[in-house]
Amino acid sequence: MLSTLRRSFACHESLVTRTLLIICLYTLATAPAEAMPHFARKYGVSCGACHVHPPKLNTFGEKFAAQGYTTTELGPARPTFPVSIWVSGLSQNAPPNTDTYRSVPNRVELIAADRASSRVSYFVEWRTLSKEFPSGSTIRDRSGRFEDLYLTYDLTPRLQFWAGQYRVLTQIDPSRRLTISEPLLFGQSLPGAKASSDRLTGLRGFAPGARSPSLRLQGVLPDNDGSINGWYGVVTVPFTGEFSLPLGNEARRNASFEFEDTTKGVFLEAYRRHSLGSLGVNYFTGSEQRRSLGFLATHRWQNLYVRAGAARAQFGGKRDWRYVTELEYIPVAAAAFGLRVDHRTSVVDPNTKLRVEPLFIPYVSLQGPGTRGTAKLVLEMRLREKQKPQTALEYSLMF
Image (cartoon, rainbow, N blue to C red; front, side, top):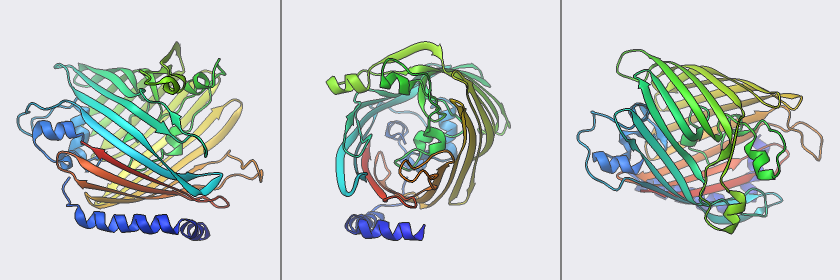
C-alpha cells in the first residue's frame, strides 16, 4: 500500500502540489459556518442548520428530511425561489494513459423538494447537464436524466408510501456521500437478463444504491423522544427503467426514457437508527436467480464517522462477497478527510488472472462559506496494488 502511495505522488506530483496549495488557501479562507440552499433561504439559516459538511446531514437535517421537509424549530418560512442549483466540473486521469488529465463540466442539476400538502411531500433532482467518463477515452452525455423524481404519502404517522424514482437503499443514502465515486457495496450491480440494447440490459441490473422506478412501504416504531430514533422496516419493489427528458441527440441515445412493467424483485430492510448511527440488515430476491444478503453499520464518535458493510451476492450461477469500510474525520464544517476501502472477492485481473486487491480511496472535501449556498472542492485518489493510481478532482457550486 505504501509503495502505491509513493508511485501515485511521483506520477502526479504537479497535480497534487497544486491541489494541496488550493486546499491550504481554501481552508484558511473559509469560515466554520455551515443544504439544500433553497431551505437555507426559506428559513433564513446557514447550510450548517442541516449539514455537518454538505451534502452530509446532521441530526436535525436527518429529522427535517424524514418529516417531509417541515419543521417548527427554524421559525416562519419566507418566500423564495423554490429550486436549488448544483453546478460542477470534473478533472481526472484514467487508464490507459494515467499521466493525462481530462476535464469536463459534468453537472448542472436542479433540485426541488418540499411538503405539497399535510400528507404529501416531493423530491425532484433533474440533471439538465450530465456528462461522465465511462472509459479512458470517451465522454458520455446523459443530459436531461432525472436522478430522483418521487412523491411520499404519509398513510399514518408511522407508515409511509413512496412512488417514483429513487435509490433503493434507505438505511444509508449514498447520494449524500462526500466522495466522487460511489462505494462498490452500494453501486455494483447484479446483472439482469440481456435486452435488445446495452442500455436496457444495464437498467435491468440491480444494485441497492442505484436509482430505479420503484414502489415502497416504510414503517417505523419510534422511540417517542421527538427524534428519528427507532426501528425501521422497509419493503421496496424496483422496476426496470429510468425517467428522463433527454436534451440533445447523444443524450437521447444514452439517457432515453425507459420503463418496463415487470419488477426486478423485492428489497427488504430492517434496521435500528439512533441519532447518526444505525445497524441493520437487508435482503434482495429477484429475477434471474439474483440474491443478496447485506449488513450495514454506521456510528459517530464526536468528529469521527465510521461506516462498514458487507453483502453476500448470488447472480448467474456465481457467488461473491462485497465489502466497504469508511472512516471520515470532520474537524470543522469547512473540511472533511476520509478513507474508504472497497473490495469484491470475485473480481479477477484479465491480464494476470489473479484476484484484484482491495481499492483504497483517500479523499479530502472542502466547502465554504456555507451561508445561503456554498462552494465545494473534492480531491479523491484511487489506489490499488499492481495498478496505476487514479486521481479525480471535482469542483462545484451549490446555490
